[in-house]
Length: 423
Image (cartoon, rainbow, N blue to C red; front, side):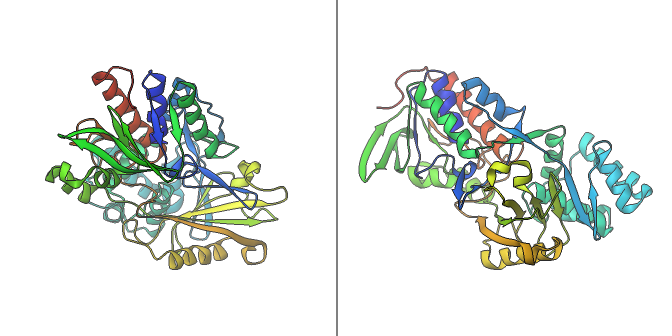
């Protein structure tokens, strides 16, 4: 999403633009693919509407064909389902779970975090919540909220959690009925319609740096090496990848230190299940925070029948592993998720079959870093990064990716006039 957004914006502003994609398909972790008649995501399940992503698509003239995704939340806590109310949501839910007096006290804490001072990023959300309440139901509630943000509660900084809650206030979302690949193909179409090119299956081998300035790329295209001269190079494979391609000797020690300490990939998992009968009938996100792993269940085909073959239903269970930052034992972690689903979903054993298990980590993570890790500019002149590894203080996921792309394009436009950008 970040690389194609940057490319489409540059092409829209009359820069000669080339996008080099190592995979045979577009979109990276913001794409989709067909599997046994089902449409499955490579990472993103929905996209914000009315914000920076939609605004960018509209600006460059790319189709933004999405249907509303209901961000309605239901929490399974203490064996009962609790729906987050539309009005007075969090206060009403806390009151329902812990009583009115506890709700009044905790809402005071949350309001101060919103309006006066955010908690420190040096404390985890788990520790921050535990400091303010020992009520297990409330702790489970926050564990569900942070699972919705795709982070383990022990690994989410308390300050970042509050910032994400602020950014999510009033947010709406949608999902493309034809899958995310269709959205990303639209951005590529803008680039090509305005004179640029998009090369799939083309791996960047080296970023050419001379005298501290990025001068172009060496790529492997269909088994043949090609050199490309460029005024600007933008990396969307993550800051670590950019450093390796450009050569560590071209980066100062402080940048490399920040890279190692702050750009930490986060792991996540998804189990896709199919059935003939509808297993979950809540049109939104059902959170199961009290199992072996905290799970967010989405009955995808209930909202988007196109994602499943006729007569089949698709249920997807997204879950944070035991640690967001440590390498995960995928087989063990996914087994925990399946066991929780068997216990939580009536009739799972007799009606459901696991279609596919997916996980994101290391070089293909859920997020390359939490927002605000490092800047988009690198110490190498005319070499930038975009994507979730360099997202500004913005919503997690796709909005942060697009914000990073817009920041880079704005800087390029201030420094370099449109014209021949590569040869």
